[in-house]
Structures are given as structure tokens and as C-alpha cells.
Length: 464
Image: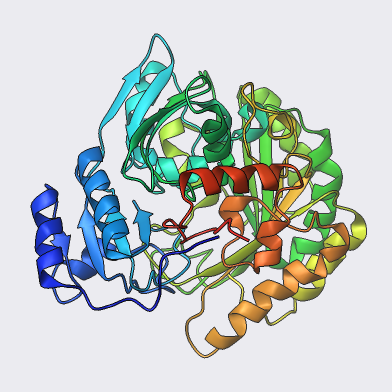
């Protein structure tokens, strides 16, 4: 496949002036005081070295930036919040969409239209008063578009499936600088690929999605001592398969920092964290939880009636940017030996520089194809194991190897890949293994049609 030429020449001031004249938003170079804030992502492991940043305010700005990049021989990257940042975007034209935050909810139709810069917390605030529940992930600070294009597995996903399964329409700026309305009738192959293939095909400037109705939610997290991890993890593998689809759960080994912002019982501790959501009332939820609660005494138990606006309290993901590296693998099953493999490299008594090892149950609606088929992969997986480390301090250099050790230790039960949003900087072979044939060939055919020069090469690059 033909790609944009490299190495790149220095920016021509006249070209930059042309770009600035063509867009309404700011055009910033690395020397500009506002550049660092404009390009800053959530993952501080990857300081951004883009050649120029365009603060897009509209689809027209995105079109102008893409056409300018193609004319000047530069690749294009896009970000709203930077949670999925995986490289420094060296030499790129970075299109920042955070200003594109138009949002509307149609309560009668149970749909929402969101701009490329909308975060889940904005959509949740707009939808919840109507009894509607956006299918966000574990953190509402993440952008809706990037999360959804990568599939989108969230805390009520066993009931409703992936966020990508509910998308009705997208607006896309292609590598040719054209604006396409993409749905099942118009551009059906592109509609299939975008929902699960992420951002390799262009820049999505708006999407329309269905919003499920949720009457009651019971959930939260219970923190148990880390020493109880073996009993809890082994019980979890037997308990989780008994749960109904209206219940979504995971369990994590957490090594929390001595952060003054954390409650005193959790600060600096090694803990086992049970995450739980149930779409229903307290009596049934407590009945389902009873087997796990009977095994150990929680240090802190935060499971109860939960407003959907408080969904972040389930996983308690960090709110501020930090350096982190991560990877995940999906499993066909969770037998006793798989749990033992996790405990051997990350359990009690193991000195390992990992912030979290999470075992998340899939199945339920995750396993069913979307009503309109899409490119979301790994639907047959029963579990996902997500590993995250913070490369800071004396053990920083050991973090990537520690992350890899957990994934490698589960190879016997792995599907060979993971969910796209959680792969991180996994080796290319794991990205290629995400889709089987003929889906991968189909994705590559869509890529060749809409981006033959691989203008959108950053992130999960689908090119061979």
C-alpha cells in the first residue's frame, strides 16, 4: 500500500498561513504557548510531537485540515480526550475535536446526536433526565466517538452489548477531504467497518446512536483485602457464569498509590476489587451478590442503589492524566489454572509494578451480533483480562515487562488477541489476530478504497 512520504520537510510558513486562513479554530505550532495544552492527551507516556495542531470547531475545519495535510504530505491524527494515545504522533497534523461538542437527545426516539468532541459525561447528563442510559465505559471522561468506534464495552454491556452495536449514522471526513453520511443504506461497507474498526478510515465528526432505557441500577464496587484474592478470584470464576444478562461484573487486583485523594482504608494498599452492576432492584441484586460477600469482609463496600450519573464510582478510574501502559487479552474460558496463572505473577506476595489486573466477564449481549452487522471482533470471548501499569518511579522500566507477563501467562486460554479499545501498544500480530478472515480482508479492502495512501496511519493501523 502506498503511504505518505517520509522523512518530512520543515513546515513552510506560507503553508501554515494558508491553513490558518482556511479554518475557524486555532492553528498551533510547537513553539506556540497554547500548543502543549491543545495536544495534551490523557496518557502522559506519549508526549505529542505533532508538527501542527488544528483546534477544529466544525466539520468544515476538519475538511480543511485533512486537505491541507494531504497537499503537504503529512499524515493526520485525531483526538478528543487522548485516552487512546499510543505514540507521539511525530510530524502529524493533529486534529483536536474537543470543541466540536454539539449534542442533542431525542427522548421520544431514544436517540442522541453527538459531535466528535463530546465526552460521555455530557451525554449522560443530557440523557438521564429522560430515563435513558448512554452505553459508556468505566470512565465518563472518555470521548464518545473514539470509544464507540473501537467497539465500546461498558458496565451494563452484558445487557445491551457493545456501544458500536447501537450506532445509526455517522458523518465522516475521508482522506480525500470529502464529507460522507454513512449508514446502512449509504456507504454500507464503510458503516460496517467504522463500527468496530475505529479511526483508520477517516475522521468521524458526528454520530447518531440509540439510547437504551434503564429504570433501575444497583451497583458499585466492594474492596476486599488483597490477601483474600486467591479465594475471591477462584470463587469469581464459578460465580460469574451463573449471573443473568442484566448483571455485568469484573474483579481486579489493585495496587493503589499512597495518594492523599484516596480514602484512608484504600490508600497505598493491595486490594481485591469486585465491580458489579445489576439492572434491577436491591433485593435481587443482593441475592446475586451474596456468594461473593460471604467469602471475605470488605474493607470498603460501595455497592447499592446507583444513579446512572454516578457510574464512574464503580471502577473509580483516575480522573487526571497520568502515564500508563496497558494491554489486554480475551479468554475462551476461565479455568482454575488460568486464575492460578494470574495469581502467580500478580497475586499476594508478588512484588510487581502493576496498578491493576482486571478480569472482566463478557458474554450475554456482547456475544450476539449487532442488528446491523459491524466489525466488532472477539464476540465469542468469555472474559477479558486487562492489565495496566504506571511507568513512574524506580520501577518504571519494569512496567512494560510486567504487563506482558500477565498476558503471556494466559496464552493457553487466550483467543490470541483482545478487545480493540484495550489492546494498547500490543504487538502488530495481536492486532492482526483481532479479526479472522474474511473480516480482516474486508476491513483492508475498505481501507484501500477510502484511504489508499494511509493518511490516517496513527492508532491501530490496519495496513499490512
